[in-house]
Length: 113
Length: 115
Image 1: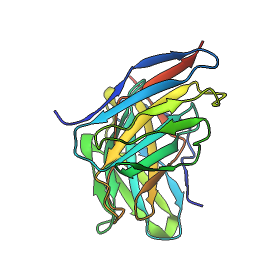
Image 2: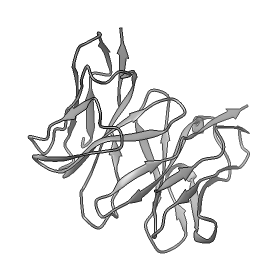
Image 3: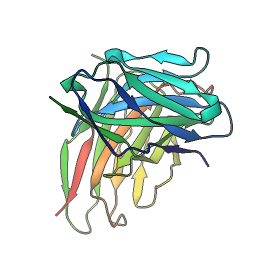
């Protein structure tokens, strides 16, 4: 069965420092991969997605992610974190011809001054 | 503005009561989805629909029911059979192509609390 692992429940980063959030997936075929962000009490906003092609994907708000098939990973990165980036981040893998998403348990990002 | 609306933002349920959560989209999307979110568990799929008058169970459908009478609407009923309904419920939609290369867009969510 498909699964997504986000090993870090919480991460604290200083404002202006770089960020990397980890995501590992288990899926037999070529995965469709997503990163979403959620502010408290809100819905999910799409940051970026990977379907095929270039394995380095650019998203909104200065985020990027790299698909590494050999490591079954799709880590999210940002070179300089802003206080407004504090939120919960979810990695998801899509599967099936009519896509169903399997989500990781999320990583809560805290930004310190 | 195109988007997904969910109402109400907060909903309270009494013991033995059925409650219905509304989800409407004006994105002209064929596919719609309901997810449940609990702390520390991510999102889990309850039901999904790829076309009007058709829907399928997701991973945690027990105690829930849905209907899809109109393309833009996909209401979720939490029945009295759902013993632990307190959660944050999220509705999503997508274009619904069979290629699988599509993106789900989410509504703002409804928080359901049991009195």
